[in-house]
Length: 426
Ligand code: LRH
Ligand code: MN
Image (cartoon, rainbow, N blue to C red; front, side):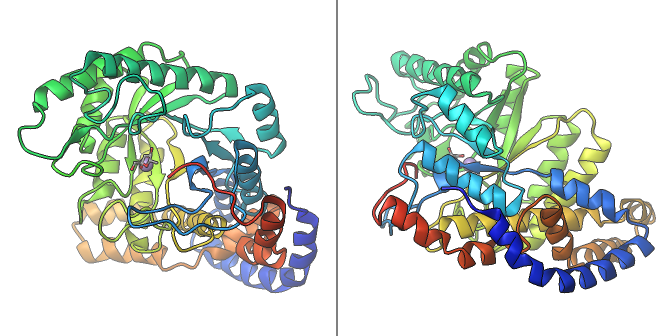
């Protein structure tokens, strides 16, 4: 299903006058403060976030799953859903596939379909945290870390297979997240499983095409509840360095113990040129995979403040990969993703409004109060009009969620796909 964006633009025409009035007032105010508004809008428009193929249906927890009607039942429908998100938001320009949940039967056809929606393929994701039907060696006791050499070799080969699929689609990176760990003290020899993981990652790294990147995602716990082999940024950073210059650390916002200073981790990784990318989401307690910016929007702003500083001052760090990694239990998955995209772009835009020069001199003066005043000046600026402008200039909707509802897209998806189509994934 493709959106008839002209109907959206027809609808938005009525709202343009009030948008223009408010926008020009804000633009004037910011120009007077020395900001190049046109450049900021260009940066917003260039900021493209990859949508996970596994978050287009209703997620679930171990206590149950409440289906969402009209879910995408195959890869083609998932690509169409991301295409719709991109048509409305103009900021969801890529899809990130998870193998084997999204194996393209006909890669050329899938590549052409994705292109027809104006999308590209972001990182490929391997999966050695579930056993597939008729899999020879189980990952119950680990995959790349396993003391069972056969299981380890099988997991290494799976990652290489995922790279080969990605090459056919035009992806340029592989994300490895390992559930590998232990539930009880004594279950694993920490050094043995870490060494096995390091050796395995090196074998995968050796198969990486010249222009590819390897993202190593860390997580403190779940599904294991005593130890996880790649538990924190330091372990991922160490493994990435062991692999080589094409390996980086991937920061999933939900993969931190409560009150971890994530913006400091981001600054450290950028200074070391090893920040590969993000899985954006939000959380109150654990890896809750909630809508971005729904719980801790100020923390997200502080993370983007470090990213903007790093992108200006750390040429040694490549342009990070931006992805959402969320799971939807109570919201329409597409509306949830549109809210996440809005929150990400708002945090980024507010960070672009931090007067970095003034902040630097206030820090030099140890003027602690002024430092916070400068951050809050930016954070308390309502930037939604700048996001609307960037969307409108690129043919998107003034308000994506309103357009999604006005066009009754979910109703049409249910008519097209039936009430009980289920999306593969978590
Ligand atoms: C692990 C994770 C990882 C994905 C999975 C779907 O918690 O964040 O990035 O593979 O979610
Ligand atoms: Mn993740």
